[in-house]
Length: 125
Image (cartoon, rainbow, N blue to C red; front, side, top):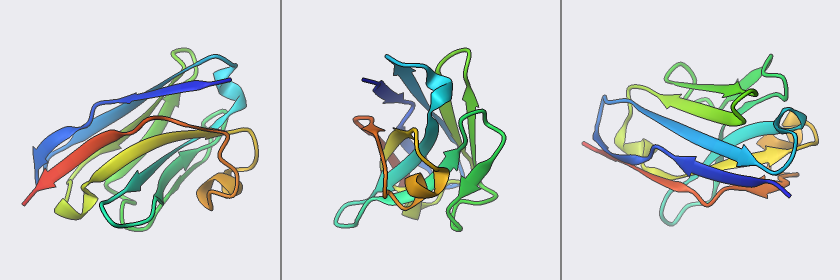
């Protein structure tokens, strides 16, 4: 069993930055691909970014590429999402996710082994 706890959300103005953190506990962190997803009110949960187990490969949804950066510190069992140039359309609950399968299966949500509880990000115009 793996527990994922997100932090770092909040209310910011457009153009600001936030850094989300997701602390993992319970199993060997480096065995898991890690990802971030978001869900806006009335919309389906969508992929935002993913990072491979050792951190050598990163993947982004088109609307966040160039503004968001995913990283991980396997010594701290933590994955981060640095969000710059935030836009009102980035407003959502952001969820951390983990899987031991392929990154592709994470991106499509075909296989997610664990979810965090989510953290709210609100960007005002």
